[in-house]
Image 1 (cartoon, rainbow, N blue to C red):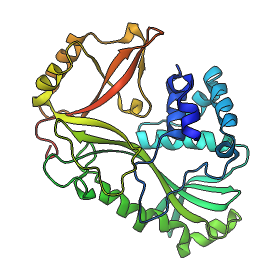
Image 2: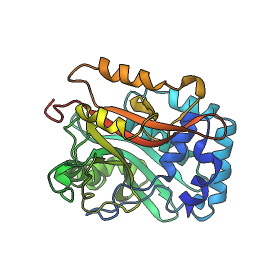
Image 3: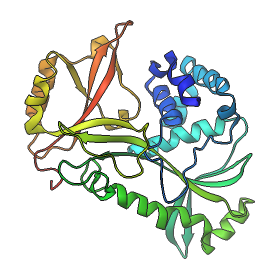
Length: 312
């Protein structure tokens, strides 16, 4: 209900990129529905969940006056998408009227050694919580069993869905229950927060045949496709005249919105792909279509991989 009410309004296409990303962060569905450890939406016990019109009004205020959000995001350098995602959550949770952010990105140390970092410690109407946040992009297999989480790789070819879930289960979520955390939690007037995680992102199917979603995937998960660069010509031939454009990594969250003056002509994309080195990093392209305002909105996203991926 919360996502539906807001994402079906003009707010989903807010003109300020950071506001679009904020809306996406709060309202995008989880990647997984069934997990071994608890998932918990950070706003689960908030009045914003019970009365989504109040959240809608707050988000509209951010679009009309984004200075506070932009200042928050520029306060610390953000070179990684995961940190950007966490900062968006922190901004919203500090503003939520009935939540208390006790700590964020809190390191746990022993004898000068860092044991880990807790993403969020919260208090709300349901108690005390330790939450781990993640935004992930996984690419499914062309030939192996897609239901097996070991076969879903990150764009760099190293990150894997099963490894991320294992790291959450064995390393990140137990941090707040470790003996070494007791004194830190006492200083924050917390007893034993309940540990859970929230993971957003996209799952990308191989083009053209697709694959089975990973075991436990949410039916509502966001999705796209991926292909090798050698297959681009065949793929593009199925979309004659389509407008494709690359997105920088920090723009991978919300649906892209591009002004007409910034839209790439079709030949620019061909030239850009041709100029990429043989072992180029994975590139995210979006297909754009013009809306009634004259801007161009994302209608499809696609990872283009070098032909040796994931070996290179």
